[in-house]
Image 1 (cartoon, rainbow over the protein chains, first blue to last red):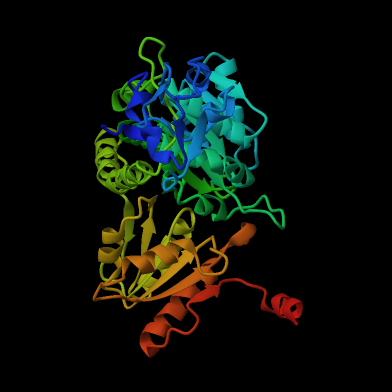
Image 2 (tube, chains in turn cyan, green):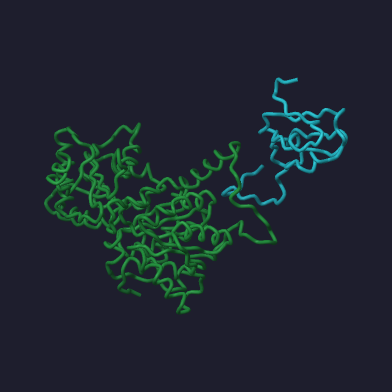
Length: 86
Length: 395
């Protein structure tokens, strides 16, 4: 990335270049046996980190670990796990 | 053509001659007549500009930031508490690398409330990333402000032109005013590379995450440090066109001087008179008048002062709890330098206290005495202080 004077961003829509996955402390893990494939996690994810499916597929380059998906999941199929948790 | 005008009019005229497109300001003493004059120019049709009236200096600088981001030449003026209220946005303007020119009529800071002159206001924002110039007389205000527009737009840095409130802002002097055509030839059309334009969208004011913030700070520091060569280049060109130049500093009988006074602003004129007087008596006294405080020209300061036996740093500001800002930066410039003169800091003229020739002479005597005896004593001394009142209050 070439830095511009005054941190001006001259390419619109370049936020994909910023991999927010580095912020993550807790990681969402899906229990495929509970997932109904409703897509609510995909709909609520604030980053392009979830690909809709049964079960959904996470792109951990962008997943900040915000936990919104786990909070919204109607069947509690998603749990936020720390680094050492199984 | 020579005209008689006060310092504020000289600042306003410079902005007019630079054909500023946006002025946003809030009135504050002693700056007020700068923007009053500009408002006259705009309402009379003498200047084709937008005058944005705001409710505070914070908003004035914010409006200037927005205006400069659209790629037009932008100007404001302030003083004292106004500058303090702006300070948050001063850092933003510099961090965004926006070319904005501001004149600051130097005034003291409250409390106690004082509308009179000293340089504590601009000294308090010296770390903001703005280039800072200090002027000695009204001619220099006009010339420096014109130069500031060129430096600012070529380096993408905001520039603050400081001059002493009342002593210059409200004192009339003859000022040689250049013709519009001459200024047009000197000042190229304003050009800002990232102008806000729906056809070419950009984002400004993005978050500087820890992965990048330091690099942006480093780049800003480098830009302000390196601006010295551009300042000199623009001043040379100005001198070629208009016959007047100021450099980054002025050396007045200092090359062979044993005692040198170091000053900024209108104090320099009084100091020059004293140098003339003492030289007539055969004393080797000189003056260095610093014009550019940011960037601080360390190498030039060292080469101008290192041969002296003693330097009296005279200034109208104080970093409370330590010493004057000019003294601190001058002393820091001599770290790791072999030939270092004795340096004494004289705090003077705060809150409009007159700095008399006898006070300046006292400073020279004290510096000379320190050099002769090799004893510096108090490094920070206050000139013209009413000792009795201070003692009573402390007792």
